[in-house]
Every structure is written in structure tokens, then in C-alpha cells.
Length: 354
Image (cartoon, rainbow, N blue to C red; front, side):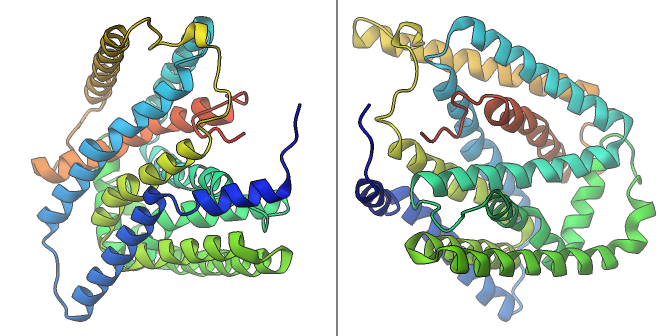
């Protein structure tokens, strides 16, 4: 089997780390961070209702389809027996998460926050691996720290800079099962913010310094710049807008670049291709069927989760209730997205990098 020279690997990274979707992700977050920073300096506040609408549009209309696409690309050329096991374990993980949330909603909330950070961090690390390279991450500890810093920006930074909104919607999420369950933790929230802020700042600094000491170079420069951009973005942009736009404009866009960078690698057995066909019309018909089945399955899971919650829209108005419900629902389906789609699928996984 031919080997790949270091020079060709460096050339590939130099080409792929300028992929249009990477440039779009960086430009989008930078523009939003500057714009909202200027609005904050001018003491202009974006109405909360507008923030909630942006969140729902970003998370439902823009980001959800990409999650389905990740699973489809992962499964399209796998053996049928593997697909059935995959779906079975996926549904079991969803049921386990729902059970945890019903039995201990505060623990369920903690898991939901962890899932969001894990998705951003682990998925982001794979993008870095496929595009810019990770020459500066020479140990498992460094890779874990890189994932923690990138993923931690999604939830930990907003806790520090947007505490009122973060706490309010966390209470609404817990209220889907047990209204007021977070009230006993309210007294320690300021201390928690201080600990989280200090810890995240130390982790970010350690990540950047260690990367420079262990390797430096272009990959370190890109990683350090993106890590700082994420921290500034979530500190400057209101949390609902930040989370709602982060996943489509950063996470999903960057996974497109990862996919493009590994598309020439072997991805499975063509005999099992879900879209395989002798002519374009057959391929188009199969693609339509897969899309419809996926949409109906997602809707069915959503209805089941909705019916399982005692207060599926909480005790608030429709719009904030919808934000709270969707936040919990997307976390519930994202847990197996990470565990089943990546950690347990060592042959390929949704974030495949050869």
C-alpha cells in the first residue's frame, strides 16, 4: 500500500484549511461578534422575542437537516445488519436520556449541556484534523483539552457573560418536568460562574500555550485563532442568538469542509449503497424515499418525547416554551448522535477522518 509523504499531507492541509465553508464559518462568527459587541457598547439590546426566533430558525430549519445528513452519509454504504443495530442502539440511548430527564431533570439538564459541548468539541477536533492538521496536539491530553476548549465555549462562556438568560432558559428546560427544580441552586449561581469562568480561562490559556510549545506552526496558529474567536463570539453575542447560529454557521459549515477533504477516501461497500442505481432517476427516487423516511422518523421521535414530558412547553408562553422544548429535544437526539454515531462506531463514524 502506498504511503503518504509529509509534504503531501501538508499540501492537503494547506489547501483544505482554505475551504469556502471554513472561511464562511470564521467570517460569520467574526462579523456577528463585532456587530453585537458594537451594539452592546452602544447599550442597544436585541428584544428577547427576536432572539428566540433566531434560535429556532437556526436550530430547526438550518441545523437539524445537517444532523440527518451526517447519519445518512455514515450509513449509506454500510451493511444492513449494521444499520439496524445502529438504529436500535440509537433509539435505546434516546429512551435512556428521556428516562433520566423524567427521573432527575437537573441531572438531565447537566447532561444536555455536556452533550452540546461534546458535539462542538469532538466534532470540531475532527474538522481540525482533516483540514488544518493537528501537528501541535502531540498528546491525548492536548487533544482532550482542545476539544474541551472548543466545546466549552458553547455553554461555559455564556454562563459567565449571559447569566440571566442562561439561567432563565435552563429553568424552563427543567420545568418541562419539574417547575422550580433549579431554585435550590440559584444561591450558588454566582460562585459557579466565577469557578467556570476561571477554569475556562485557564483551560484556554493552557491549550494555546501548550500548542505553541509542543509544535507551533500553521496548525497551531489556526487552532489558537479559532479558539479565541469562539470565546469572543459567545461572550459578545446573546446566548440564544449565539447558540442558534453557531451550529449552522460554524459546526455544520465546517463539517462540510471535513467531508470535502476526505471524499476521495474509501467509505464502504458500494453493494450496500442506499442510493445505488443504474440510472439517475433511480438514485433520485431512492434519495427522496430516504429523505421522507428520515423526516417521518425524526417527527415520530419528537412526538414521543413531547408526549413523555409532563409539561412539554413548560409553564411559560408558547415561544419560550418552544425554545425550552427544542433545546432539550435536540440534546436528547444529539446524545446518541455523538455516542452511537462516533464513539461506538470506530470503523467510520459521522466525523470520519482517515
